[in-house]
Image (tube, rainbow over the protein chains, first blue to last red):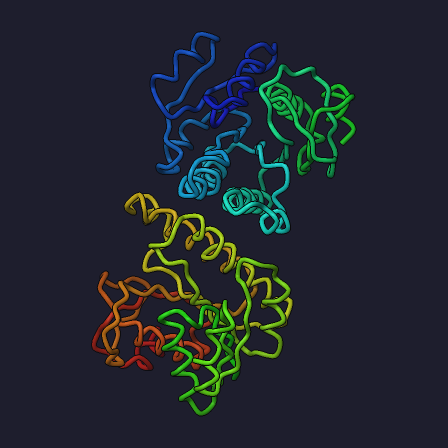
Length: 216
Length: 216
């Protein structure tokens, strides 16, 4: 299975491409914004595609040609400006869904935010609310497509080493989770078609990632 | 017909409430953000409802109880921050559509931007692009509802006096239009059910507003 990782140069993206390249049956295609980011991924044997998420759908569709799944883990992040959040987290995400359709890719995994409900938009601190709203509408758009989608809502991201154990369910108590574990949750979701049409929150926990994903 | 004007205190909103109150068969309910804005509308005999578009859907639905149509002419405007554009122009707009459904209101008129296509997002100046994107997704959301909707795409807004003449069609050459004329285009759209399910661009022109609206 070949996986287009959108936002490969992000912190989760780098872990994900690494995990995919370490896996016997999977190969990664790293979608990145700048040419100079390519060597990092080429050195681990991954294909790359330099595409601007703020540009047209067509180059994204070309990058998606021949892949079996798309993972959206790009993100302006909650700390960049609100201008980028609507253009990347919402519009960029929707363009990758439209690109998936154009390229005939059915499988799509979205890395969302922990809570993107209407209530979460309203209860968010003022500086965070636009990000939550952008993720809310990206998730809503994905739910309305006929893509074989999975929406992952991770807890507060840390840079600690992953330990391969998580707590995953529709609703879990808010907690943190290492980005490395999130990457392996994505990988496990790609391996288990039982996650198609599902969405779940995930934080650190006591269950091995594969068991947690299979029990969803 | 009673019309809930969302964003009544805006420049188009004030013209619209005035025009509605001057009309024999129509009455306005002005939805405003602050209590101190109410007297302006009460002095012309209009009802008011103080509701925060960044709050819950429920108070908006209560304001919409018993009205026959909703006009969305609220707007952070292209010159406010991108944080407000996603929370007001997109999320606020969607909440009024959800409120319409809750309150059983079928008729909905959206004041959009001149061009909210994918191409317009990409060709917009960087500071304007988030606003175009927010309006794009609000329009997309409205098209996906079963509301009896009309989407109006006015040209560059001016504060000149309206002369009651416009050029309206699916695509018209970009030009300016007085806000007062936009208000009367909205009024005419409410009066002509032939505009249901349609969207059009409108700029200043040579055709009387009613004739322009009827010919759409």
